[in-house]
Structures are given as structure tokens and as C-alpha cells.
Length: 190
Image 1 (cartoon, one colour):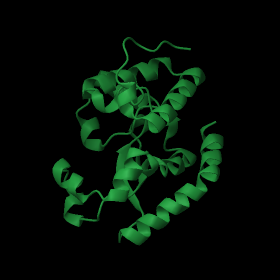
Image 2: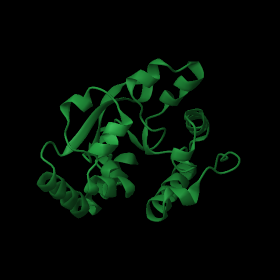
Image 3: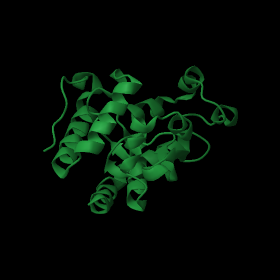
Image 4: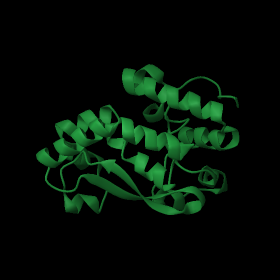
């Protein structure tokens, strides 16, 4: 199902992807995509793709500094991040089988190294472009709350739940994350 839906989305969104790519190439020297090593299902490593939203700074790529990274984001980069357009190249990751449309967001190796046995359960399914944590508050959640939503997804995922998450993701993109802060209670299996 992921392959069919991601292929369809790539086809339908191809004009938007092309225009975004052209604007990035014209306004920001450097590569079109940001690539980063992530950990997928069963700890399989892969390179996640995103449209680049920051100015290239080779020294900054070797370390993570939130304040410096914020300074490097371009005006167009802020726009594509707000509208989640920067995430659309991950449809290629879905097409390749590295990711699913829905699942826990893929994480970096350093975080996985710190997981306990309970937290490692989030690696029992393919990582997704969106997930239960992303539609239940995402940036308003603590790291522990995100992990719990991810484990809940691992335990309860179904086609019905995936559809609900996809629909809610579309609403969040259209109306903003602030309108969909953390909900009370847990989502039950459909």
C-alpha cells in the first residue's frame, strides 16, 4: 500500500516538487537535498531525504547547534518547513522501502544508543513520514511522551489508525500544529 500511495503522491505533487527544487537551486548554492543517516526498522540504517532549508555550512554539519542552525534557515526554508514541503522527498524513502507513510519518526543513531528495551520497541515497525506523536502535539510533547505515542502505535497500528493519522496530518499542515495540541487519553485500536 505504501508503494502505491507514495507513487501516486509523487505523481500528483510533482509540479510542487519541481518548483520547490528549482527555487532551492536558484536561491541557495549547494545540494538540493539534505541527507542524514537515520535508524529504521530493526536498526537498519538509511539516509533520509529532505529538501534543504538551510544555507550550507560544512562546519555546522559536523555538530548540532540549534541556535546556529536557526540562523542558517533561509526565508524560503522557513516556508517549506512550516508547510512540511521539506519532508516530501521522504516519499522516495517510502518508495525505496526504508520508511512507511505512517509510523514513528526515524531517529538518529546517537538517540537509539541511549534507548532502553522499552524504547527500542519503536524500531519494531518501519519509521514513518508522520505518526501518532506528530498528530497529538508533536513539538508540544516531551521526548518521553513522543516515545510513548510511538510505542502505542507499535502496539495498535491498523489501516484505520493509519488513515486517521494521515487525515489529521493534512489538517495540521493546513491549519497549524497549535490547533492540535496533545489530546487527552490514548487512541484505541480501530
